[in-house]
Image 1 (cartoon, rainbow, N blue to C red):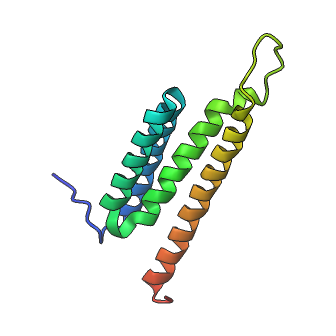
Image 2 (cartoon, rainbow, N blue to C red):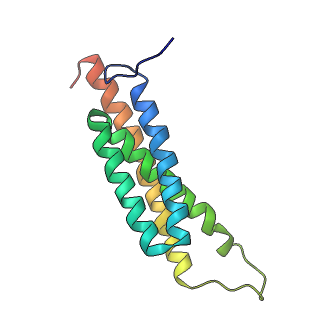
Length: 126
């Protein structure tokens, strides 16, 4: 038995949000390993995901930003808690960590706003 996920299906926003988180996390990992090529690939994947999501684009974009931001912050968090003098980090690592935190928080806020607006539209308030 095959379950078709359509735009009218209530499962579609959650699917796009989860796929966005996964694509964002993969893009962040690749961007940290190969900065220029990885950033271009991550941006292209994000654009393709948001264009494919059409009516659910805010869920896809919020998930993408959440995944990318949390993955960047997670990978760079050892730079903040490092007390070993033998290990040094580039000073720009700290600013990239905080940029990842801001991206993650922005994605989380975008998902919450998309959920609230979607429920209000479904209830006929908007």
